[in-house]
Length: 514
Image 1 (cartoon, rainbow, N blue to C red):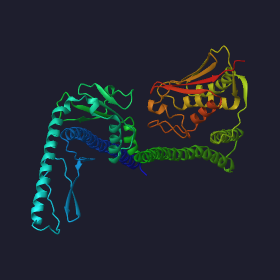
Image 2 (cartoon, helix red, strand yellow; image 1 turned 180 degrees about the vertical axis):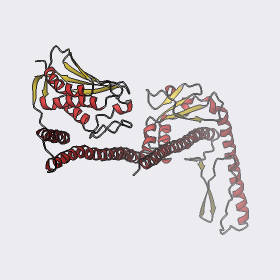
Image 3 (cartoon, rainbow, N blue to C red; image 1 turned 45 degrees about the vertical axis):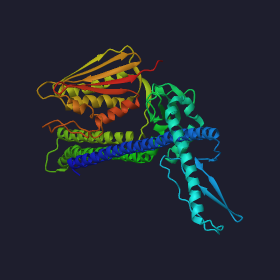
């Protein structure tokens, strides 16, 4: 799959995930807002009904008290039924027959005279049923008008004196608490609440609990009580729900699992995309490795094959010098081939963590000096110079002699490979101490490394692009091997480079306190 296709697919899927996540968050926000609005409407309906019940309760109280007073003063003696319903009994005697009739009427201002049904009975001589019915209707009408006048006086008195009573006497706290709980539950609100009755100027009249102070709260629901009174006599009923936020959040909690699931999918997708890109990169590097390995092995094999053919050619005169030359060529190319194979095998062993390093406390300066002595001839053959600066006061550190020797050799060999053609190679090896550490630097004046490549040079199979130069061969394993060896020594390695001005590798090894 082409790289551009992978990036396009990754971009499209990423945008899709982000859009879906934003849509889910917006839906949750709208759901929360809608639930809050439904809750607010239910509370407002409940508070309005409770305020109405308070007004009805006050009207009932006035009716019952004032009517009793008026009946006692007028000696009417009409019984008052609970709820404001009057019951009157009319007895009609006719030849030993007793007739009871009940008339019920509401105390509303629009009450009308109920119709009176007169029963059919055997009349006394000279008396008609119609005359008896008219007489009963007149009596009932008289009583009705008397009762209506009493009700009008009660209502007029209530209107004149209602606002004169103190607000704390007009409201029964227990009745208010019961009504609030009942109405809120009927409207689907079944969570804890606090209530308070205040005057319009904020003075508390009744409250559910002493420590409840509505002045410091902002999320309260208010309802005017006795709104028909003068503004100074009105009351304000305030209700606060301490668990409202948790209640609203719980109503949309069913969306949280879907958000978590989407987040997990998004993380999984990103992880998969990174693995795909990394695998694609590894595949490319392995292909380059195979190509490089083919070229690296092809040259010494061809040289060995050619030398062997020359030795087997009977037509050529084989002098001792020529035989020695062919033998040296075969030997050198065999060493070169063995070195390349050894490098691959060593890297493979480090990958499987099957290599056992043999650490011992050794003189690092002495080890480096031995490598420099061997390598100085190679640098001199290309017209370069190799300088050493041993500045350590304590050159001893724990190291594996063979693998650490390979590290120094690989770093100096890279300096030779990536030298500049227009400037003689200058290779400098320096050692010095810092508290508890031994540092080694290998610097050259070669072609340098770009900043974007510095972060990748220690990756396996990675090879820095060298432009049009085709004489530099390799597997991309040298620096990866170097880093793994240094890490196995519990040390660090870093590179400093500037394109066109050379490269410096700095190795840090820990030193034991002993």
